[in-house]
Image 1: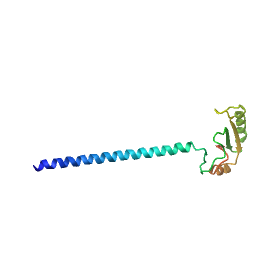
Image 2: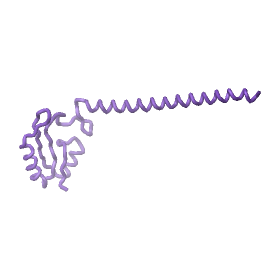
Image 3: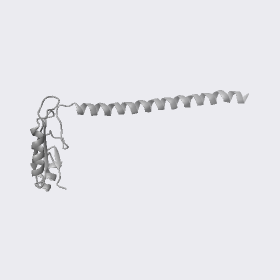
Image 4: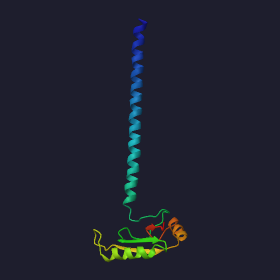
Length: 130
């Protein structure tokens, strides 16, 4: 008879372990899902904010719907890229919302270009000379 009385207790302990394990798995699934949803919502919210921010968290000097591109180049490359930018801008290509695309080329010494790029640069792209 002692064997019969031990069987229900052992089965009850196994059932409890299954319930605890299942609850833990459900808790972890809920936690991971909540974490993922939170991160996605944060990313989507930052995309749709009205103010764009640079790497330092300061507002960038151009508007989000700007059709202008300013490229920083070395003095050596400035004449060639200025000619290419003029050719592109002269075509009058428009964005989907009707703005004419314009490319500006500004020449900086390489050291100055790097210093400006590390802060809040007055350009959107860099074309190094090498």
